[in-house]
Length: 206
Image (cartoon, rainbow, N blue to C red; front, side, top):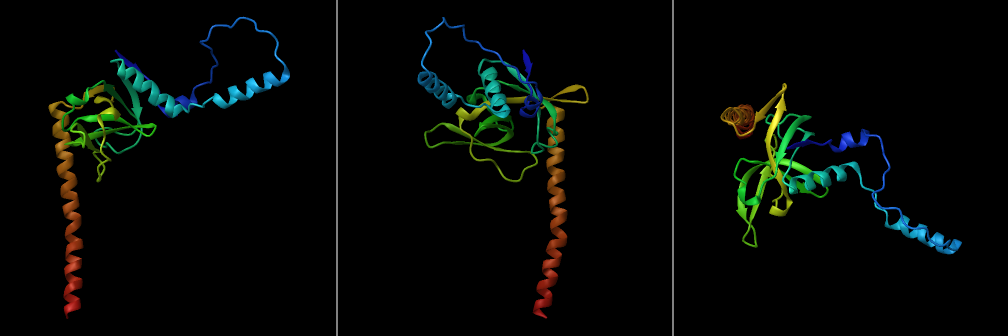
């Protein structure tokens, strides 16, 4: 079962509702003003404000840990062109032991969630695995991701009214073509820079 949950930005636009899941308490004897003031201050101190983004992360974690898939709009362009900005992705639960090179993993980092591709799997100091991830449009990898940070695996993206399997043969071919095109572009850009450098060195010798 896939559950469509709003992203942090969507949650900010939702109307606020007040509800209470606690049963009504039995009537209590009237307290003095000093006691009542102390109770109010204590309640105010213990209240914690949960931002929409933290709520989104907590809900996502809870659903994935229960074995349910989730769908949400992915902000950012770090996974372009595999995942374009604001496209809806589907994330399924995954065990760290089942993660392979090339998988796109959703993980938690300091109150946010990030979906990047596994480019390397290495051994941690405790002998367990840890994952090196990088966005398809990023040049630098992320900090190593521990198994406890892993929330799920991105399996598909919705585009043009269709669901695209990110691990299909066609998706892999398109990604390979994009990678080679990017490398060719960087190589072409380097050629003029290399020629300019050689010209400057020649002028200096003269």
